[in-house]
Every structure is written in C-alpha cells, then in structure tokens.
Length: 225
Image 1 (cartoon, rainbow, N blue to C red):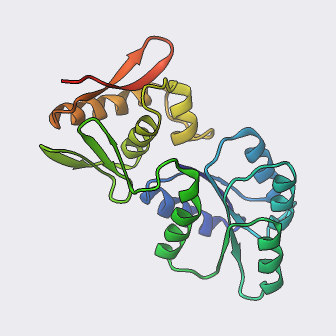
Image 2: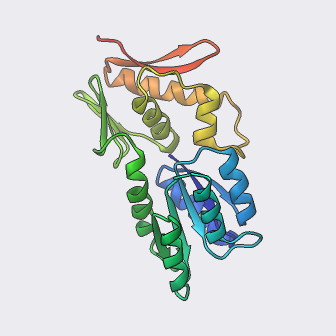
Image 3: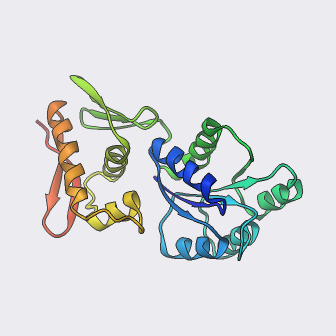
C-alpha cells in the first residue's frame, strides 16, 4: 500500500517514513502543499498523511483542492493542539481522520490502517488463493505445510498479486506502487523479489504460482497441483 506524506518538518518526516516503511507501507515524502498537489496529480496513492501547517499551500487548501477534483483518497490530517478550528474545518472538507501532535507511533499506524481499510476489496484481514493464505495484519504467508513472515516489499508485492489474481501486473506498476517515483532502485529489483516469493511458494508446496509473461508483467495463477 502506497502513501503520500506531506510534512514540512524534515526530521519528523524522516522519522515517519521509517515508521511507515517498518509497518509495510511504501511512502513518498514531500515538504510543502504545492509539491503534494503535484505528486497527487501524477501518482496513484492509497492514502495521504497531510500536515495542516505547510509552506506555499497549506494542508486545508490541499484537501479542498483534491476533493473539488473528485479525488476521494483517504486523508489523515496532522494537527497541532491549538488548531481545533482547523480540525473541524478539515473534517468538513472531507478528511477521514486527524491526529494531534505529538502522537504515539502505534496510534498513527492504527489510524492509517483504519482509514485505508475501506479501500481494499477484502473485509477480512487475510487473503486466500488455492492453499495459500496471506495474513495482512501479521504479514505471514502460509499453507497447510508451513509459513513465512514476509519482509516489507515481499509482502506488498504478494498482496498486489493476491488482490488481483490472474491479472497481469507490469514491472513498472510494481516499481510505481512499491518503490515510488523517486526511487533509485533498478527495475530488475522487481525480478529479484519475484524470485524470493517464488522460492517461498515452492517451499510451502503452493498450488499457485507467479507466472511471467514476456514484456507484459507477472500474474498469480492457480496451478492445481
């Protein structure tokens, strides 16, 4: 799941990026409202963490602008204790939730999971295809013969594949959703992580497999073995 973080305090932003990546989210960070609008226009995000007090364009204006364009992305506002009126205004403008600084890291993760839950097609915390189950709360990939706890990007790739069975997902799409536009990673990193996942599926005696289609991408197929 890919998030955009708009927070102008760079030390806080760096800490939040580490926290969110540890929670198995992909994150792009921007430091002013103008940049946030540019990223939202160009990118495909599952959630937005939006500080109210930002240079160039403030958070409430960003929120008002994207909602006026029909963008229904879940938005979590970050506010200071003194910004009570701004909290009310933000909710009226279409924010999904707000969090007052300072906040506990687990609460931030819980709020994000809650506000993005309705964006997913699955109401439960697990995805099952064939004899393989992916627990989206513990990041555990399992079968009747065993289990693995997936690392951040492994989990995100497997989740994309299992939420879109039999659908081709291009290498570029994986890069965009998981590594982000600003990543310096080479595109062959996708193949490397696909290889990791294939080895785990083999070890789990999976009756599903990740199929490669030349020059098109990857899809999750039931093998029936």
